[in-house]
Amino acid sequence: MTVKIVILASDEQDIKELRVYLIKQFSISTWQDTLGNLKKSIRVLSDFPYSGAIPEEFERLNISQYRQIISGMNRIIYEVRQDILYIHIIVDARRDLKTLLIRRLLRTV
Image 1 (cartoon, rainbow, N blue to C red):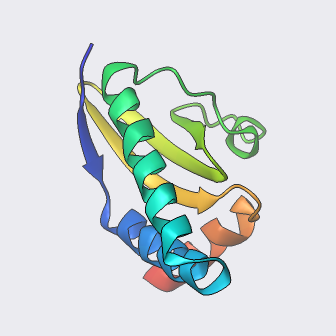
Image 2: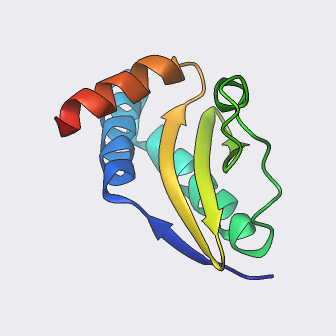
């Protein structure tokens, strides 16, 4: 089953923030490696959309339509609807997801 991948606008902001962080804290080379790994992981999802697990934070709330895969030190959180896979969040795995979600909600208000 191959699905179409859609990266949501909110996730584009996540990618920009991740880029700035990695270049500032490490190097442009680290960013380029990370971006390459993220792209590879997303390509795998297009063929195996249900390969990810339900994130623990969502499972505790009985929200089961979201899944995640780990790509290096990053989490890719996505949702599959019919033949489209929506990428909602790409975030450093060490960051607190709850804080990120609250910040994102406040940003839209």
